[in-house]
Image (cartoon, rainbow, N blue to C red; front, side, top):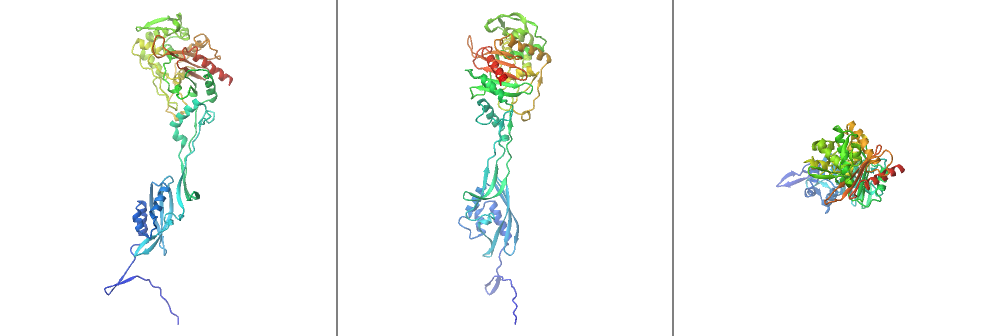
Length: 508
């Protein structure tokens, strides 16, 4: 005889007081999984242990280490469903950290003391975890993009000239985020120091190279020209047609006096004063007086060496740098507000933002005739930098004043060139060559086509105060400015430096 066995659902029962009570498992696997995952998200490890069958002694440590190893700032978990009859409940984890990472895992649920509980193993954290393994976030630093000269040569290395390194430091400070980009990270499964697998990655944004306007050929010519100078000095060179800075050399290093130094410009400022006079109707041939000494506003002004040139054309007064002439003319024909206005057209009192820190040139509106006469010859309260004065020479060379720049114009505040009046350009292109041919710089051997202006700027006090030596000039599409601190006469110190600079360029 065949016996048929019928499957039955066995339900635990208890006999209490003669009655029969059925004992059912409370809740469901998914409900317990949700509680467990919610406790995990809020880092409530005691609640997680309470929902676990025989949790190991290092239960909390597994979860704390997992969070620390991944450098998590947040975590979210969601039940995705269960499988029968194993009571396996799936979940989706979303983790926030160096790598924003998501993965699918599962929890094994069992009946324990009439409740569903998690049967724990390291795989409850991540399916690939087991004893002896860890999941770690590994940071990969972003690669630094290079800073380049105009020709593509890298200049942010130790082999670049010292004055260039000064610029590089300023560029790194201003454009650090562009150069550095963002770091990358990955999530590795590791055993000790060995990587077993990469579970996730976060892509990095690469840094973008920064190309400067520095012309290393021009820079080397400038550095060589300053080699024999035994006082602090700097030379700045620009391309007048664009405002691009081609060279910035400081000797010695440490302080970028070319861009940050504030000095009285001395007679180099007569380029600005002469421009104002011509704009108001004077011509290069108009005759003026150049006495050895002149009292203006109660203060005696004199020419270098107390030279008296008598009645001469404005062109000669400029070439010989007559202080008495320009002092008289500024008071008699210009006035303080007019000279301040013309100075502003050459960049004075305006922002200077070439891509690295730079000071603005100062021309406070003169308070009286003496103050005006002093300002007209670059003394008194007028202060400027070699960079600023290089732009003044560049404006005459190009016909427009342009803001200087060390990087692409798209990286700087929008700025438009300021066109000079044609009469001003024409006159100054007559006056400045005369300085080199027959004026204060005529003793220096300059290549043909050079135009410039010497300056001897007194500073300090005393009967014969010390003076800075200046020379600014242009030749073709190249403008430059030289200062030697405490160097004395511009004609005997700064002008020869400029001559060597131009000669070096011709030979290179």
